[in-house]
Structures are given as structure tokens and as C-alpha cells.
Length: 501
Ligand code: HEM
Image (cartoon, rainbow, N blue to C red; front, side, top):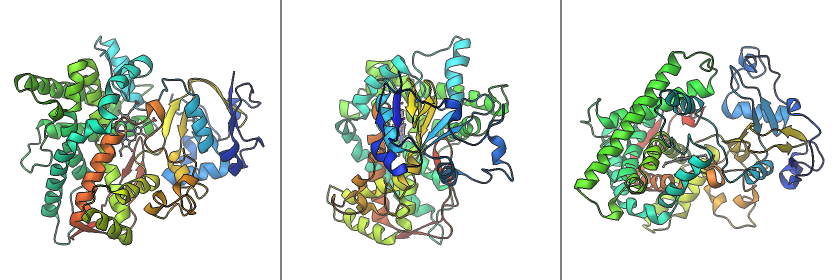
């Protein structure tokens, strides 16, 4: 039985039709096998790697440029062969087919990724007899994932559960701005690595939401061997090692090389540290009980189910800090390069109105242009007929939302920062609702969508408001590059000028 997702004309060249008329016909069997899905030619073991060498088809193509090339050359469905033991994957550039697959997945969709970390949690720990009941939302699947999600959704996905944190977060934002003023040089630029700097502010936000406590992450006197510094190092190293092992070609599936061993050590240390963090918080809570509204989400979870709380500590720290810090930098960068939009936003913030639609529109527009993650992954739980090609069950499909949301057929003037498109009426040519609803799913989709979305949006809104109220941002020099990996990373030099308002 196949889920058939195809253009009625049966050709992937009729793109406009594909995005509007693709349909599901579960009775149709595809006429073309998986091996015929178009994509760069592959060799045994090394897959398509040789195309990236000098003179190769994909040489020097990275990030968006690579995806533009693949889409133009092969169409909306492209096969990439796995190298060095990794699975083959499908890149999908069609929003209608994407939504059809998302919707056809069962009630427990599987999102793969973080393969080396999954290996540590599910293989190495099992061999040592140290397996935990739960590993976390980003590592667990099926029933285990559902158990955690059932507990976590009510504390993370409802705006009212997060509301009590707004005031303490705003205090942190004001302290962060004060620090930014202090560390500016004579040209009003910040010479520290801005991503690291912002990660320390976001860790502070996370401390409040997770445990109702401060980590003092940007306290000038904090010691290098402190728990806070170790947490920051772990978050940083987790992404760096995941990039090397999961994103770059690496032979770890054949033998445990040095990078792999470092990653396993990092995961072991991080688990111990996170466990200690939660343990200490729970002991403090016993001796000094807090009112419900002052408790962090981990404390609330731990009172109901300690195993879930422990697993979610890893989630919060591994994917809740770097993502928000990168998201904030993207918004600031686009505002610095669009002073008229920045002024308009400042007017809204200075008006002290509690509703800030323009701020929200700026954040959405930045997510469209410079999303924190390039796309969403699923391991299919059934087989599909996609444009008449067979896509078997257990295939890795990457829904390339960054590419979709930067396409002219979805958002007119896609490379212009136009927050207004999120605010104008239906009859306006820039109206965002003219794009396919799945073109810009930058927080994912459905049951497996980002559980931290509300927290992330709250942190971003509060911090960006304080920054725009305090600084007139400028950008000097070349564009800020993005490094595409397990998550997108804004790369330095961070040539912001933070002039006082
Ligand atoms: C701007 C910030 C963020 C962005 C753009 C973002 C984006 C995403 C995306 C695209 C996914 C995959 C969704 C899917 O596969 O359908 C995801 C999953 C997840 N995110 Fe976020 N995220 C952000 C911040 C956060 C924060 C602050 C937290 C923690 C509080 C968090 C925790 C998670 C978790 C635990 C998952 C896995 C959910 C599951 O599998 O059930 N994220 N996020």
C-alpha cells in the first residue's frame, strides 16, 4: 500500500502544479524504484563525496547554494547517498509533498539526527548496563518519546505556564544589555565572540525557565571550572562534535576515532553534570520549598516523574541555548542592515504597548530568511509514492524548509527583509498566506514539532526589545556568513556597532 504524492502531470518539472495539485492516492503503486530517484552519481563506500573535491560537480557549493544547485539540476526530490556507513537520504524541496508526508506519518513520527549521540545512549550505555529509562525528546522514539512528550507538553507548550518567567527574564535581559554596554570598545563594537556571549545570556534565561535559578553565566568573576562554565562548554562542544561526526564525512561507524571518543566522553560528562544539577535543585527544593509559580519546569516535572525530568534536562541544555542565541543574532543582523525597519520596531517598543506585532513579524521574517535549522528530518514510518518514485519505509527524508522559504514562488522578493509581509491583508501581493503553509515550518511540524517554541519566542522577544530600546544597530562590512550543519550557525566576525539610542 503506497501513499502517492505526485504532480498530476507526473513530472517533477511542472513545479508550480506540484505545489498546488499534489495529492495522496494510497492505492497507486509508483512506477519508478527508489534507486532511480535523481541525484548526483554515487560510488561505493564514499557515496557522492568525490563531487565535493576540486573539479567535482558540487565543489565549493555549501549551504543554500548547494541546495539551489541540487533543486535546479534534479528537481524537488533528490537522493543523496550515505557515505562511510551512513544511510541514504532524500532531500525534499516541495512544500505540498512535505505536508502530505508529515500528515501521513503515524502518531509517533520519528526524527533522526544526532546519530553519534544516539549511538552513545542506545548502544554504548546499554552495553555497559547503564541505560537510562529515558534519553530525551531528541534521542528517544516511539513509546519512550511519547511518555516524555506527554509530561513535557503541558509545562512547555502553554503560554500561561511560561508567563511567570517573563519578569525574571526581563531582568536578565536588562543586565545583559548593561554588560554589552560595558564590554563595547571605543568604536562601540563587541570584540568577544558574540555567539558565545549571547549563549551565556540564553543559558541564564534557561536557568530561570528550567530551575527557577540563576547560573550567573556572564558574571565577570565566574570561575573557569564552575558548573556554569562547564555547561556552556558542553553545549558548545556538543554541536561541534555532532557537526564532525554526523554532518561531515567521518569513519566513526567503522572505528572509534579520536573525535568519536571525545564525543562519547563529552556525553558521559554532560549526563553526569546535568544529573548533578537536577539532583542539587531537588534537594534545595526539599529544604526550601518554593511556591508553584517560582518553580522551574524541571522542578515541576521532577515532582511528577524524575526520569522524565532527567531526560528533559539534556534536551533543554543541548538544543535550547545555541538555537535561541543564533536566532537572536539573525534578527539583529537583519535589523542592523535595514535601519528603516529597525526604527519602526523601536517606535513600537518605545510606545510601551503590551502587544508588539511588528516585533513578532521581525522575528518571523528573520526565521524565514536565516532559519536556525535548515530543515526537518523524518525517518519514514510507511512507504510513499513521491512523484512516481518509490520511497521505502525507514528512509531519511529531509524537508528543506530554508530553501522553500527563500523561493520567489513562495515569498515574493524572498531576499528582502520585509516584516510587513506578516502583517498585511490578504489582498496585498506580499501577504504571507499566499505561500504554501508548509514552506516555512522553522519550528517543525505536528506532534514532533519544537517543544521549546514558546520559550524560545518569549526569550527572543524580551531580549530583542531591550536591545533595540538601548542600541541603534549598524553593521559594518561584508555579509555575515552562515555555517550549515546540524543547526545553522551565524559565523563571525560579528561586525555589529552598538551605538547608544
Ligand atoms: C529559535 C529557537 C529554536 C528553533 C528555531 C527550534 C527549532 C526546532 C525544530 C525545527 C525542531 C524539529 C521539529 C520537528 O522535527 O518537527 C525542534 C525540536 C526540538 N526543540 Fe527546538 N528550536 C528552538 C529552540 C528550542 C528551545 C529553547 C528548546 C528547549 C526549551 C527546544 C527544544 C526542542 C526539543 C526538545 C525538540 C525535540 C522535540 C521532539 O522530538 O519531540 N528548542 N526545534
